[in-house]
Image: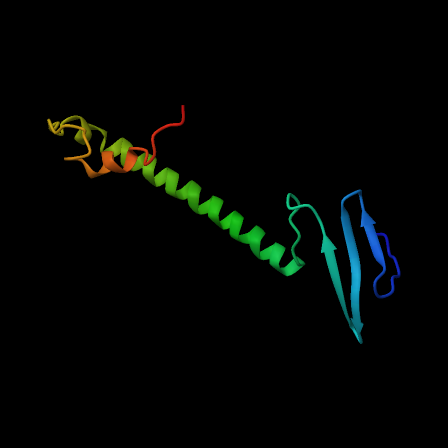
Length: 109
């Protein structure tokens, strides 16, 4: 770990495009400003840990959901094949879903 001492309004450069500026110092609190490209996530450590835990939980839940869907599809595959087909036209007058799929504006030529 690199340890640096800085005073108010002094900066630390990380690479070519990240700048850390000391804004205020009050007793045991230091207020800093961080200039970084939008492509770089900047979080306080406690927020970073919460985001990381939420991402792990989402992936775990997604995996469980995918397994549930797979087993449901395997168990009900024959039901879909025996369903009668409807002869409804696929135009926007009789099918509201088709209406939603149509572009609102004509394509640019």
